[in-house]
Image (tube, rainbow, N blue to C red; front, side, top):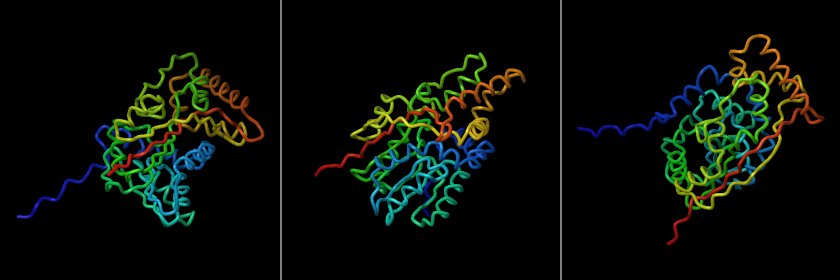
Length: 294
């Protein structure tokens, strides 16, 4: 009698099933089509992440929530003779990342669809774990970061970009301010999976410490988001976003027209020679997996 085959790890944690559906359904098409726009909007944050990660030639790197692959490609160039594993829950975004890496002529990248909360990594198989705004969506952050800690070698480095609270991020606040149309809009629930899931520094320190990381540090990084080359370009981009469509839902035609005009006016106020720039704030989070002495 043969032994039964070992159980396979689930692709996603049950608690993250909604995230899986969201990032693999029809709604993700807009992200794929606009991938270059999304990546370019936050490009001023990228050097901060890469400097903090300190990727060296030969490093084994895990890019968590790799999305359309801009951080993956950058990491692969720094790793050179090493290797980068791009992990994302979204199949369509991974395909976009694969095309980006192929276009860049990079052969030291592997693309894996999976959920970092439950994915079975080989123990101590990475020198660096990084993420560019991709780790705020876990249903159980402690479990996810404990899993990532197990994937890092002793002394391995963690570097993350996560958004600070909504009040410090004008790039999204402008939508809520201009499209509310007099309606009270609920603020994002603290710690709930979403763009602001790791906005609270105390929560971040607690989660990473509980997961086994040391030397946890959060640096306040302020850079503008570039929403477009000019007002028309930025307006077209912002009105294509899912949150915009959600905020406009339920408004009558007059209220909708007025709200969109307010949005255009706000974008015009931020237009300049470098495009439409709107304030943004992130935490640059760094930590280490401790080395075991002896």
